[in-house]
Image (cartoon, rainbow, N blue to C red):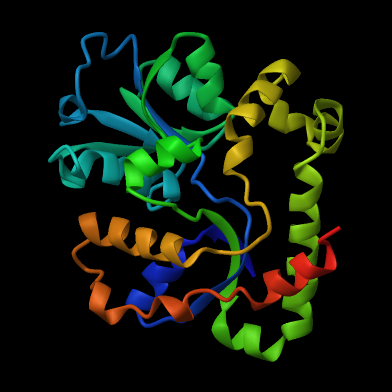
Length: 258
């Protein structure tokens, strides 16, 4: 069982490996792309990133995928930039501030911290539903739990228990206050600044899934996005209905509907 981005299930099916998402945690990628105000003060458009070094959490990650999509829509090929893995915490901050990279595609609280300090200029933002629609042209499912389809068939009780826990947590997040959030987050996640963490959480709050269900239109959006920059993925060879199931999330939603 893995926690990751939904589009990975499509990628795996394109490689003839059946992976299935069983519960959705994020209804938007929660990734922002920003350019260094120090390295690129004259930035005007994504085409300016041609030949630049772009920090991502890791090569092949969702942050890499979002950067690829933003670039491809500007006519810039992934091969025309250099991707650098910088992680998602202090290392990412240091990489941009020290000039090791010219731009970055990453998650919060890193992007909010850089934004607040004036270190980056945000050029694409999927931390909100509006920003996600602007980038992808529709709803884009993000973080989910997925596993081998055979495991789902053989271990329905385990999958249901996990879906129950996630949906219960999603329901809690809809009403949790700042103090509730801080109490549950590991200290290392705060990057030494609780106010910053809460500010970044508020930026992505609407991107958190409400009930664990993965929308059919979202699956279509993900496939369209992937095929737009990865020619190895053939849309007519992908059966989206086999990349996810909402059966477990529906039962969990009914269990915690109050």
